[in-house]
Length: 294
Image (spheres, rainbow, N blue to C red):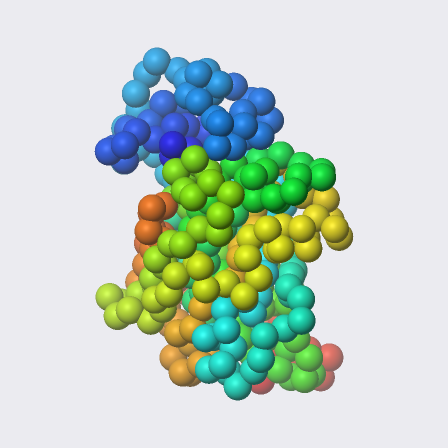
């Protein structure tokens, strides 16, 4: 089952998308009443409206329930680390994103003047359906999965020699997610998903791998996060990206680039990089008064 968050006629709501991907029906039941059903979710629980809406006439929003959080995990594919001359970390490395960083499946990616090294990262994104509590397999608590492109400003913090995750990972309107959630029953039950993922820039494939190659599998990632911040229904977890990113080659995104991130069995994001408005002279500078990208 595919569940999208859409905006139509000035209203934002959840909708069930049909198999063709052309139409949807509004979900009238509250999110908390059905998200926790996960692999057992049946359309009856959604209280679907009778009217079939044309999806082409709606805007696909990031599939995030209002009030939910966005977590990211880095360095989770060995092939990526090896190309950077590094080794696997001893434990997952995680961070938080604000919801304002997210954009929809077809929205423009904002290219901030704070960076000259805007990078792409296709990622499988897990969607939490219910609290993990004492479940022996954390992934059984998922509602399903979506696609993410964890856009990163790689030069963030270079001026002071330390990593600035706020600038690198959290800037407004930089992170595509969607186009919808595919529910857990469409995948492999309680096993690690093995899904082909691919990202292209201007029709050139830059990333291609399979989610089975994660260093830390889903259950370990979810348990790691939950031990520190209790996961809630609707939370998104970006699970890390593979080799082929611009950081490895020095080929970063530029305004006008068309980026397509695809994961088999879920769908794809199609976004164009757009230059953001120029900052005023008093903003986006370091302690020495220099631009942060210097």
